[in-house]
Structures are given as C-alpha cells and as structure tokens.
Image (cartoon, rainbow, N blue to C red):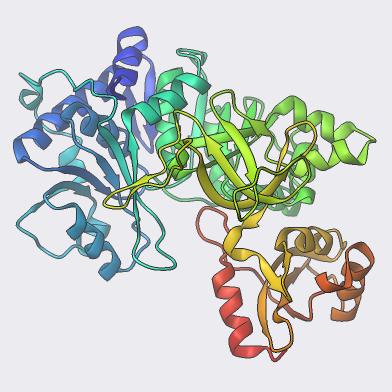
Length: 503
C-alpha cells in the first residue's frame, strides 16, 4: 500500500477538517490532497528521481511527503542546519531532483542543471491543471517512500531507506483511522528532516488530526501556540519539555493549558527529575515516552500514560525505576538484548538492543540491508529488559567507556550525578587514561545559585556505584551542547576533555 492512501482516506472521510495550521495559513485535508496532487504532476513533468525539501516546518512539508508518494519518487528532506558544503554534497547525491526551498536557504544551493529548485510560495500555489491526468499512485509496497540521510558524525552520511510497507506497517499498527476528534490538534516542533517529523505528518493524517506547525522552538512561543490553537497533543524532545517546565517555574505561571491532553516525548534521554516535574506541573496530561529510530520507521517501544502514573505512585523502587525506561515493545515489533557475540541475554543483563518487525527497514542506499538472517536489526543502542519487558537504555554502543576491559555505561553515572540537588544537567564521556586505556569524565551544569564541589560529586558516585565508575575528571559548564533533537553531543565534550583536561 502506498502512503498516499493515508491522505486519500483522510480527504474522502474528513475533507473539510483543517489539516495544517502554519501562521496565518490554514489548509483542509481536501486542500492538502489537491495541493499534493498538483505538485505530483509537476514532479512527474520534471522527470526528477527524487522530491526534496530544504526548509523549516511549513505546509510545504506535508504537501511534499504526499506529492512524492503520488508521483512515485522518494521523498528526501534535507537538514537545513548543515553547512553549505554539506548541503550541496547531499544535493549532488539525489540529482536529478525536484527541490523545494525558501529564500533563506536557496542562497546556499549551488546552481545545477539537474536540480529544479522551486520557491516554497510557488510550490504551494501551482495551477490545478498539473493534477489533470495524474495516474493512480503505484501500489508496490517495496517501492521507496522516504530517503533520510543520517547525521554523518563519523563519516559520510548514510542514506537510510524507508519503503511504503515499512511506513504503512508503523501507521496501521499504532494509529486508529479517524480517531481524532474534530477539535483535536497536535503541535509540531520537530524539524521536517527527522523521522519524528515525517511520522507526525503520517500519523496525524491517518488520525485526521489538525497539525499546528512551528518553524522553531522556544518555550514562550510554544505555550502561546498551545493556548491560541487549543492544542490537545504535542511531541517534544526532552530538552524542549525541560525548557517549558523551567519557563513556567521562572515566570511563576500555572500551566493554563486546559485543552492539552497528551504529551509524547522522545529522541533523547529524559532525566528522571525532569519528567517528575513535568507530571507534577501537568497532572491531567497523559505522558508517553516513545523510543524509535529512523531505520525502524519511528516508534518501537512505548511507556504509556498508565505506566507513567503507576511508576510515579509506586513505593516499590523497581516499579518507580520504570519511569526512566522507554517502556515496552509496541505490538508491531519484537525487542531482544544480545551480547557482542550475538548471544541472547536474559532479564537485567545489559547488551546491544535488537529489534525486528515489518516496520523495520534497516536498509541503506548502496549499502544494502543491515538485517541479519533472521530479520533482526541492531540499533547500536545499549540497554536491558527487566522482568516485565520494560526497556532501559544506557546510551549508544559507541558511548560505552571501556576502562581496563570493563564496560561502563555513561547513563548510570549520569543518573547518580543528576540525583544531587545542585546538579541541573550532566554528561559522562570517555577520557584518555594511560593506565586503563579510558577513564571517566563528566561535564556538569549546576542549578542557578547552587554549589557542589568535584570531591562531593565524586564521593556521591563512589557511594552509589563502584569506585571504577567515579569520574576522575569533572568540569563545570554553563550548559551542555545539544542538537536540535535533544541529544547531547558527546563528541564535543570528549574533544573538550582531550584538549583541556589532563588525567
């Protein structure tokens, strides 16, 4: 099934409903389909092999996703935060392409005869005649629907491939068609080049929910949009949620969001103290932690609202601990934990996280499939499953600190540091050590007007964990480096330690 079917169903059943709100622009589901079909005609006429987007959130993003599906070419959203050289290197890899952008980013593009660049305003106002005679979208479930470039932090970015069957499996397996009430709205703040941005469009369209777009994030604007559009649902990365909570606390404001019913979060580690504060501030809101990857077409594990409340209210420390988990596998996938040799591990044994299911692509352009013979995909995340099947993540496999042959998870040390009343944020990384190969370093952010010494924090870790976990180097920073999706940039911190810290 082609993902264009999602929009067809929404437009036919709820065509008059508002699909997209972006500033002063409002577009119904019927209008969204008409726009996507006009663009599909333009893409086919251009004979492009790809439909690309280089822009912030706007109605052009959902139009481009579905237009590519109608036209039968892959949709490729590009990261507008990359350097000019990096952007043009990616553009070269998708030529010939039909590329929509805005004035802000058009200047970054080097002219190419095999790239048809279209301004966003023109893109959204193409003539209806382009849709005339448009053939039915292809129904090959194995056709490529989306191509997403990885971050490329360790080399040339890989092009992850998501086929129509992967995305449809995810949507049909996790969303009920037309489940949203007519006044429901989701506030979209994640960028369109991330899998969360794409899955938000697809799942919201299948639920027939209004999408309210922001082209950037700050706490005040987010709250204003929630109130102005009576937003019922939102997806946030952990740093965004923390900033909203901090803003409300600093301003002495109540939440004052009577329409807000559900907040989903994911994309990075959520500190236990942050979700506890958020649940206290929004007591009537359902919180969901969603864990997924690009290669898995988004979510594969969920900690739902009831599980949040049960964990927060429990006196059992093992149950309370689940508030820092990412929940249990969705019904569409299986999750397993294996050691470095591929041996299946049992409950509470940390190792590599593997996932299997029809929504899992695990495939890269020119590199082929990364699935093993039994269909399992290695996420390259480390973690473990408890006795009840709750998944706890310990970080990326590459982030593990190997001290004298012992694997040390940064996450467990960060959790201890964050338990100190003066610590607002912390990141633990490997630092060079002549004796042990690697040692433990920690970058710590203190709360405003709070104090803590290096020795005090080291002693805290020593009391809670083994002495091998004690950071031999601790630096205090005003803030930690994060990307726009709330993931701490450990490579930046490691580099700073390598350049400035003698251990």
